[in-house]
Length: 232
Length: 232
Image 1 (cartoon, rainbow over the protein chains, first blue to last red):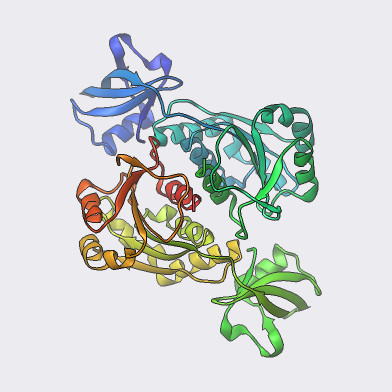
Image 2: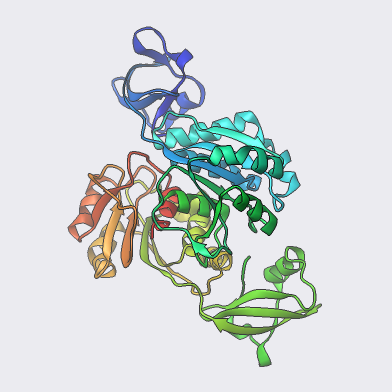
């Protein structure tokens, strides 16, 4: 936690804040904070700044919010639902890199059981994004939506999501190679382990996506997401 | 497993190979291979090609090794020992991206207990690199060495490792920003969670490392490693 993320309704009068729960534990156990220490804080959806600890029990800070959060990555991430084991870190990782719009979608090679994972609960998906913001000292929560039907999403919704952006689908077997520098705005689609099937690639191409490979190496989804976002 | 990795002593006469253990299970259960199917295979340290299944019980293939493995990344990765929970995927991930030389080193903020993790066993460290090769369809095993003392490693060994390369230490608080395209040869040092301490950065600078930040976002070690390697 490189930033203590606060919510609007936690702000008291005159910039006073009381921390409870997970953030309190972290500040006491990991930061080993003492009265007078200053921590980086941020208001969810708002500015970042410093919080000076005024009391340990209860844990209270006086905060000053002065700076803008870091600039976002101008990319919409369209990701075939990854296996539950990696879902959390893909979401937190993409958030930490500055992605502000995420769609988790179905695809032929997404195992049906993945859609039943408790990790898809609203609480968990929110928590992973919060963890990504706290890691990267950001305050702007990315949107995250689930789309359980590939075709209707691609045919009815994705074209307008991608409008005005460079739309790329990462595909190990594509003929063209992803450039080593990417600049936004972009819409980036990444398939499941094993990749999108040919028909899915064609549906994406039909609405203007370019299929591009990262090279001869086939990467795990979480590696591919981070390696591509790292180029932006 | 996108490539079935074979070892020299497994090669029988006339390109015959018998698969056992983990690879056999995977080929039968995940690939659901049948006689006549062809899989991508590679010889550890050698070429890649196709293996045609000639029998299921025992599982045997006839192989033809014809192509070179994908080109390596010309980078030596010097990584403060990450926490055991992420060690495996950092090693497998860096290997899948093509890194061929890895040093896991100590640093002030590396918790001492990390050095006692069973994940540091030779078998496990080898297995993670093998998994990375199988993922990326590569055959060239990266070297991996452990250095439990920061100062002697940096002062006596690292200068000659880094000679003739661009040497960069990723440091969140550096003044200069890492370029968005990197080309080898490079030596890349990445600190522990919380970063290298000032003295460590100075030691690295004293032997020619440039301290560079990725920007205002502080990233987890595994995210930083992949995002930086993704630029190469």
